[in-house]
Length: 253
Image (cartoon, rainbow, N blue to C red; front, side, top):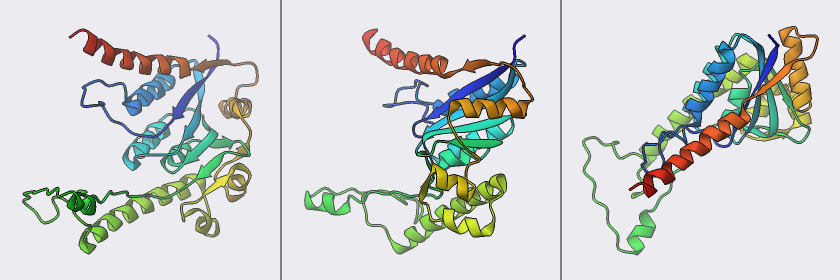
Protein backbone atom coordinates (compact mmCIF):
# COMPACT_ATOMS: atom_id res chain seq x y z
CA UNK A 1 0.00 0.00 0.00
CA UNK A 2 1.31 3.47 -0.90
CA UNK A 3 0.83 6.49 1.31
CA UNK A 4 -1.30 9.21 -0.26
CA UNK A 5 -2.10 12.89 0.11
CA UNK A 6 -5.56 13.74 -1.25
CA UNK A 7 -6.25 17.00 -3.11
CA UNK A 8 -9.81 18.37 -2.86
CA UNK A 9 -10.68 21.62 -4.72
CA UNK A 10 -13.15 24.12 -3.27
CA UNK A 11 -13.86 26.58 -6.06
CA UNK A 12 -16.42 29.21 -6.94
CA UNK A 13 -19.25 30.58 -4.84
CA UNK A 14 -20.34 28.40 -1.94
CA UNK A 15 -23.99 27.55 -2.44
CA UNK A 16 -25.94 24.34 -2.12
CA UNK A 17 -28.86 24.48 -4.50
CA UNK A 18 -30.21 21.05 -5.29
CA UNK A 19 -31.71 22.09 -8.60
CA UNK A 20 -31.41 24.73 -11.27
CA UNK A 21 -34.20 26.28 -13.34
CA UNK A 22 -36.57 24.29 -11.10
CA UNK A 23 -35.27 21.01 -12.52
CA UNK A 24 -34.77 18.26 -9.92
CA UNK A 25 -31.17 17.57 -10.93
CA UNK A 26 -28.48 17.52 -8.31
CA UNK A 27 -25.54 18.78 -10.37
CA UNK A 28 -25.32 22.25 -8.83
CA UNK A 29 -25.18 20.93 -5.29
CA UNK A 30 -21.43 21.27 -4.86
CA UNK A 31 -21.79 21.00 -1.08
CA UNK A 32 -23.06 17.43 -1.24
CA UNK A 33 -20.35 16.58 -3.75
CA UNK A 34 -17.64 18.10 -1.55
CA UNK A 35 -18.95 16.24 1.48
CA UNK A 36 -18.78 12.95 -0.41
CA UNK A 37 -15.17 13.49 -1.40
CA UNK A 38 -14.18 14.65 2.07
CA UNK A 39 -15.70 11.43 3.44
CA UNK A 40 -13.97 9.43 0.71
CA UNK A 41 -10.56 10.84 1.70
CA UNK A 42 -11.33 10.40 5.39
CA UNK A 43 -12.29 6.72 4.93
CA UNK A 44 -9.38 5.80 2.64
CA UNK A 45 -6.75 4.22 4.90
CA UNK A 46 -4.01 4.99 2.36
CA UNK A 47 -4.79 8.73 2.49
CA UNK A 48 -2.69 10.17 5.30
CA UNK A 49 -3.60 13.83 4.84
CA UNK A 50 -5.74 16.21 2.78
CA UNK A 51 -4.88 19.43 0.96
CA UNK A 52 -7.89 21.64 0.22
CA UNK A 53 -7.17 23.90 -2.76
CA UNK A 54 -9.41 26.93 -2.27
CA UNK A 55 -10.30 29.61 -4.80
CA UNK A 56 -13.61 31.11 -3.73
CA UNK A 57 -15.22 34.49 -2.99
CA UNK A 58 -17.34 32.90 -0.25
CA UNK A 59 -21.09 32.47 -0.27
CA UNK A 60 -23.79 31.13 2.02
CA UNK A 61 -22.96 31.35 5.75
CA UNK A 62 -24.94 28.16 6.37
CA UNK A 63 -23.09 26.07 3.79
CA UNK A 64 -19.74 27.58 4.74
CA UNK A 65 -20.40 26.48 8.31
CA UNK A 66 -21.52 23.04 7.09
CA UNK A 67 -18.26 22.47 5.21
CA UNK A 68 -16.24 23.81 8.14
CA UNK A 69 -17.87 21.28 10.44
CA UNK A 70 -17.34 18.47 7.94
CA UNK A 71 -13.61 19.25 7.62
CA UNK A 72 -13.10 19.57 11.37
CA UNK A 73 -14.49 16.07 11.87
CA UNK A 74 -11.76 14.53 9.69
CA UNK A 75 -9.12 13.04 12.00
CA UNK A 76 -6.26 13.44 9.53
CA UNK A 77 -3.84 16.32 8.86
CA UNK A 78 -5.54 19.03 6.80
CA UNK A 79 -3.88 21.89 4.94
CA UNK A 80 -5.66 24.71 3.10
CA UNK A 81 -3.84 25.92 0.02
CA UNK A 82 -5.24 29.28 -1.10
CA UNK A 83 -5.06 30.07 -4.81
CA UNK A 84 -6.29 33.51 -5.92
CA UNK A 85 -9.18 34.12 -3.51
CA UNK A 86 -10.19 32.89 -0.10
CA UNK A 87 -12.76 35.38 1.11
CA UNK A 88 -15.59 35.49 3.62
CA UNK A 89 -17.13 32.02 4.06
CA UNK A 90 -14.28 30.44 2.10
CA UNK A 91 -11.86 31.68 4.73
CA UNK A 92 -14.13 30.24 7.42
CA UNK A 93 -13.61 26.89 5.70
CA UNK A 94 -9.83 27.38 5.39
CA UNK A 95 -9.58 28.23 9.09
CA UNK A 96 -10.85 24.74 9.96
CA UNK A 97 -7.61 23.23 8.60
CA UNK A 98 -4.46 22.65 10.65
CA UNK A 99 -2.35 24.96 8.49
CA UNK A 100 -2.99 27.50 5.74
CA UNK A 101 -0.70 28.23 2.78
CA UNK A 102 -1.22 31.09 0.32
CA UNK A 103 0.56 32.92 -2.47
CA UNK A 104 1.98 36.41 -1.96
CA UNK A 105 -0.78 37.75 -4.21
CA UNK A 106 -3.65 35.68 -2.84
CA UNK A 107 -6.58 37.70 -1.51
CA UNK A 108 -7.39 36.48 1.98
CA UNK A 109 -9.99 37.48 4.57
CA UNK A 110 -13.03 39.59 3.74
CA UNK A 111 -14.37 38.43 7.09
CA UNK A 112 -17.92 39.61 7.56
CA UNK A 113 -21.50 39.13 6.44
CA UNK A 114 -23.48 41.02 3.80
CA UNK A 115 -27.21 41.19 3.24
CA UNK A 116 -28.41 42.31 -0.19
CA UNK A 117 -31.94 43.27 -1.11
CA UNK A 118 -33.27 44.78 -4.35
CA UNK A 119 -36.01 47.39 -3.93
CA UNK A 120 -38.17 47.40 -7.06
CA UNK A 121 -41.02 49.44 -5.59
CA UNK A 122 -40.24 52.75 -7.38
CA UNK A 123 -39.54 50.95 -10.66
CA UNK A 124 -42.87 49.11 -10.49
CA UNK A 125 -44.75 52.25 -9.53
CA UNK A 126 -43.28 54.05 -12.56
CA UNK A 127 -44.65 51.39 -14.91
CA UNK A 128 -47.96 51.05 -13.11
CA UNK A 129 -47.28 47.61 -11.72
CA UNK A 130 -48.98 46.78 -8.44
CA UNK A 131 -48.42 43.66 -6.35
CA UNK A 132 -51.02 42.69 -3.75
CA UNK A 133 -49.99 40.27 -1.03
CA UNK A 134 -51.89 38.62 1.79
CA UNK A 135 -49.87 37.64 4.84
CA UNK A 136 -50.73 36.15 8.21
CA UNK A 137 -48.08 38.05 10.13
CA UNK A 138 -46.59 41.53 10.09
CA UNK A 139 -43.16 40.35 8.97
CA UNK A 140 -44.17 37.37 6.83
CA UNK A 141 -43.23 39.26 3.65
CA UNK A 142 -39.96 40.51 5.13
CA UNK A 143 -37.42 41.23 2.39
CA UNK A 144 -39.83 41.14 -0.53
CA UNK A 145 -38.60 43.48 -3.30
CA UNK A 146 -42.03 44.95 -4.01
CA UNK A 147 -42.10 47.48 -1.17
CA UNK A 148 -39.66 49.84 0.59
CA UNK A 149 -37.69 48.55 3.56
CA UNK A 150 -39.13 49.79 6.86
CA UNK A 151 -37.01 50.66 9.91
CA UNK A 152 -38.29 47.67 11.90
CA UNK A 153 -37.48 45.33 9.01
CA UNK A 154 -33.97 46.74 8.71
CA UNK A 155 -33.41 46.24 12.45
CA UNK A 156 -34.44 42.58 12.15
CA UNK A 157 -32.06 41.96 9.24
CA UNK A 158 -29.23 43.83 10.97
CA UNK A 159 -29.70 41.76 14.13
CA UNK A 160 -29.53 38.56 12.09
CA UNK A 161 -26.37 39.68 10.26
CA UNK A 162 -24.69 40.67 13.53
CA UNK A 163 -25.43 37.27 15.07
CA UNK A 164 -23.95 35.47 12.06
CA UNK A 165 -20.93 37.79 12.02
CA UNK A 166 -20.23 37.21 15.74
CA UNK A 167 -20.35 33.45 15.22
CA UNK A 168 -18.04 33.76 12.19
CA UNK A 169 -15.50 35.89 14.08
CA UNK A 170 -15.55 33.74 17.21
CA UNK A 171 -14.90 30.59 15.18
CA UNK A 172 -11.95 32.16 13.37
CA UNK A 173 -10.43 33.64 16.52
CA UNK A 174 -10.66 30.22 18.18
CA UNK A 175 -9.32 28.28 15.20
CA UNK A 176 -6.50 30.71 14.38
CA UNK A 177 -5.72 31.84 17.92
CA UNK A 178 -5.85 35.50 16.86
CA UNK A 179 -5.28 38.03 19.66
CA UNK A 180 -7.53 41.02 20.32
CA UNK A 181 -5.16 43.56 18.77
CA UNK A 182 -5.13 41.68 15.47
CA UNK A 183 -8.87 41.16 15.66
CA UNK A 184 -9.40 44.90 15.08
CA UNK A 185 -7.65 44.57 11.71
CA UNK A 186 -9.76 41.72 10.38
CA UNK A 187 -13.27 42.44 11.66
CA UNK A 188 -14.16 45.24 9.24
CA UNK A 189 -14.56 42.99 6.21
CA UNK A 190 -11.51 43.97 4.15
CA UNK A 191 -9.21 41.45 2.49
CA UNK A 192 -5.41 41.24 2.66
CA UNK A 193 -2.80 40.12 0.17
CA UNK A 194 -0.80 37.05 1.14
CA UNK A 195 2.17 38.66 2.90
CA UNK A 196 -0.04 40.90 5.03
CA UNK A 197 -2.36 37.98 5.75
CA UNK A 198 0.62 36.03 7.09
CA UNK A 199 1.74 38.98 9.22
CA UNK A 200 -1.73 39.26 10.76
CA UNK A 201 -1.96 35.52 11.40
CA UNK A 202 -4.65 34.60 8.87
CA UNK A 203 -2.23 32.18 7.14
CA UNK A 204 0.84 30.22 8.24
CA UNK A 205 3.01 29.96 5.12
CA UNK A 206 3.65 31.58 1.76
CA UNK A 207 3.81 29.03 -1.04
CA UNK A 208 1.90 26.92 -3.55
CA UNK A 209 0.81 23.33 -4.06
CA UNK A 210 4.28 21.85 -3.47
CA UNK A 211 4.65 23.64 -0.15
CA UNK A 212 1.14 22.66 0.93
CA UNK A 213 1.81 19.00 0.14
CA UNK A 214 5.17 19.08 1.94
CA UNK A 215 3.53 20.62 5.03
CA UNK A 216 0.76 18.01 4.92
CA UNK A 217 3.37 15.23 4.64
CA UNK A 218 5.21 16.61 7.64
CA UNK A 219 2.01 16.78 9.71
CA UNK A 220 1.27 13.19 8.70
CA UNK A 221 4.79 12.02 9.64
CA UNK A 222 5.70 11.00 6.07
CA UNK A 223 9.42 11.26 5.25
CA UNK A 224 9.64 9.69 1.78
CA UNK A 225 7.70 9.95 -1.46
CA UNK A 226 3.95 10.09 -1.44
CA UNK A 227 1.26 9.45 -4.04
CA UNK A 228 -1.01 12.39 -4.86
CA UNK A 229 -4.69 11.48 -5.08
CA UNK A 230 -6.15 14.49 -6.92
CA UNK A 231 -9.96 14.37 -6.90
CA UNK A 232 -10.33 17.42 -9.15
CA UNK A 233 -10.85 15.57 -12.45
CA UNK A 234 -13.26 13.09 -10.90
CA UNK A 235 -15.30 15.91 -9.35
CA UNK A 236 -15.39 17.87 -12.61
CA UNK A 237 -16.57 14.82 -14.55
CA UNK A 238 -19.35 14.30 -12.03
CA UNK A 239 -20.42 17.93 -12.45
CA UNK A 240 -20.40 17.75 -16.27
CA UNK A 241 -22.42 14.55 -16.14
CA UNK A 242 -25.17 16.51 -14.36
CA UNK A 243 -25.21 19.08 -17.16
CA UNK A 244 -25.49 16.25 -19.68
CA UNK A 245 -28.46 14.87 -17.74
CA UNK A 246 -30.30 18.17 -18.24
CA UNK A 247 -29.82 18.10 -22.03
CA UNK A 248 -30.83 14.44 -22.10
CA UNK A 249 -34.04 15.29 -20.22
CA UNK A 250 -35.01 17.84 -22.88
CA UNK A 251 -34.01 15.84 -25.96
CA UNK A 252 -35.70 12.64 -24.73
CA UNK A 253 -39.08 14.36 -24.56
